[in-house]
Length: 184
Image (cartoon, rainbow, N blue to C red):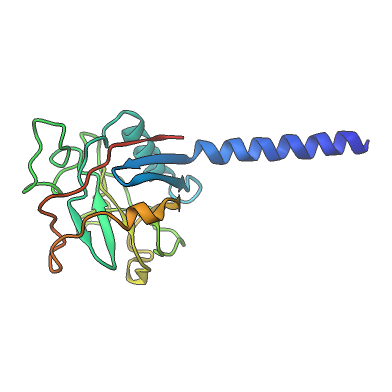
C-alpha cells in the first residue's frame, strides 16, 4: 500500500509539472532567454490568444516600441511592429494588432508587480488584441484595470536590458525586438 501511495505521489507531481510547463513560454531576446509562466485560470482568453500568436510565429521580429524606464516595456504589434514584415512602420508601431477580433477584458486579482505580463489596450477595456507589456517595477495603478495574464519567472535581467525610450513618450528610436516566442 505504501508503494502505491508513493507511486501515486510521484505520478501526480510529474503530471502537475507537465501541466505547468504547458503554460510556459520561451522568449528569446538578443540579451538572453526569458521564461514566462502563463495564468490560463485567471485570463483564459488572453492566454489562448498569446499562445496562438506566439506559436504561429507572429511575435518573431516584433519590436519593443514603447519602453519607459521604471515602468514597462511594450511590444506585440504584429501588424506594424514586425521588423521582418513589409508592413513594418516604426511610426505606426503600437497602433496595430492582429487580424483576430479584440478581446474582452479579463481583469484579475493579479497585481502588476515586477515581471508581470499584461495586455496593452486603448481607452476601451475590451480593445486588447495582440500587444502586451512587461512591468519593470510595481504599477499598482494598473491593477484591475488591465488584463494581467502571465509573469517572467526566469531571465528578468534580460528584460531589464531592453533599450529605453523617450522619457516622456516611451518611443524607442532604435528598438530591441523579439527574436522568437514559443511555448516551452
